[in-house]
Image (tube, rainbow, N blue to C red; front, side):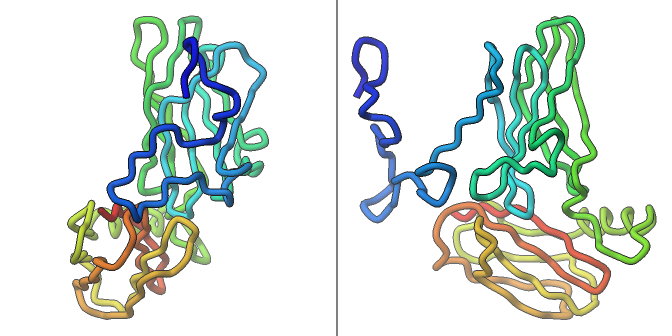
Length: 230
């Protein structure tokens, strides 16, 4: 409950206004994430503000924001722990000049690169980071031609409708034998099929609402697409 313009400390961690669609929705905090469903990262800076979040295909969480007027990126494992393999112990801070910088949004490209957008003073700012190539094909050479071919494969594949309610169509596939998998946010396999057809469909009606990942695995590598289930 709210008292005198603040929140009662005894209410910490509780959902004060649950917004489930029906009585079967579980709106309690996920105790497997962070500490009882909560992760707080304090950089020890006066001005700290998160503005956007994105999910990688492997389930890692990328948070974008601003700290002391500098663009800030933080990456977490699926359990809420900072990914120390990313930047400086999971954190990247970029000074964007003498203006009052503010990061407002983030996008992750199909090749795993991360794009931040915002402003510094009265000027627009876009930053792009190399990321860890989550979607790049794992081949022996992994050279530019392989990388470019993987990007082309991603751009051709059509996963629709997205968001999906019942039937999901995966189309514009190559003629090679491929394994199509749907994974939940914890990386658990929920649906799977192996086919050489140029299209395939899944009945997702029985899946719970939330975020999933559709992966297409061939001998050449793997591509992935984020899926929203209604």
